[in-house]
Image (cartoon, rainbow, N blue to C red):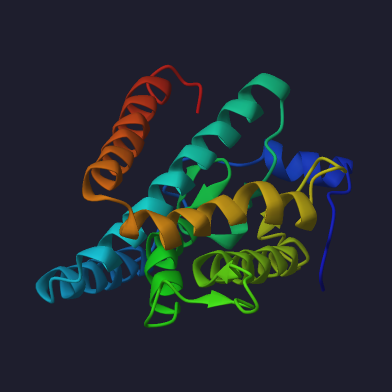
Length: 222
């Protein structure tokens, strides 16, 4: 059920080779429903003026897109991505490593992670006898990163190969450390940055995403 590392098999490579990026052959109406749910969540938080929660969602989602773009570039250069999604598991593949359903989930993941933090976000664990302790934001990021890495391990082991790892050195541990930890550090720490730094982070992040997509997609790189 759980797969912890890529297998480097010809089957995995064949599944990746068969991926149809941005094809509508599997498209169905769940696409619209999921989009409506995401809009509802964001506009509900905006209406309530919960700016920090919106910032948390946008911070993680922007990092997610930068990672997916990088993964697609890796596939173009080296032949295979670090991760991929199968045609059979989705209604629409955005880039080789991310489908519509997965991307929309990540648009909400930062909001969920931020809401799971203690009400006092300055809380530190093990802070006694002169020790500064560990930030609850860091602990929360590590917990969410571990949960997501394990769930990705489950997806890699599904019968329809919802998630595909080709490289034998890529799996749960590198996914946890290099991917999900940065995701949730962004969602947990960016909202509480000084306003100028926070705004600079979000604007730079999303401007970079927009430029990379606008350039690399027409060139056929991703």
